[in-house]
Length: 112
Image 1: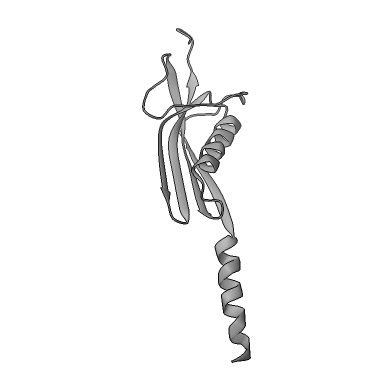
Image 2: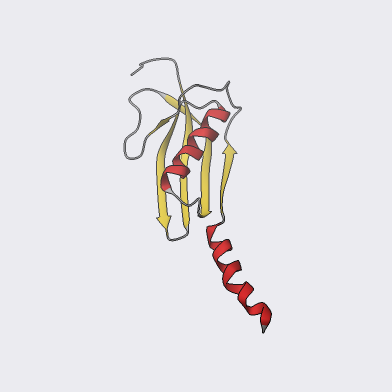
């Protein structure tokens, strides 16, 4: 009976913990890293591009914030050498967040 006081403390600590996991599925070899990675939700960039990877970020607990998911996608995109992430889908629920998008690089041609 004396150890029952530990359970509420453990429950509080586990609720405060959080994690962000980022994954990528490469579709072609990654180019050199870029400086800035644009985010496109409902519209596509007005310039030619090719798809490099599908990227996703999963957040849980204290790290389940939509903004953190977008920053995680941008960081992964930068590491893969992408110029932008398009077709972003962002889901936020109590205790979890999920973002997925397509990492792209610009092709020679019309620029913004």
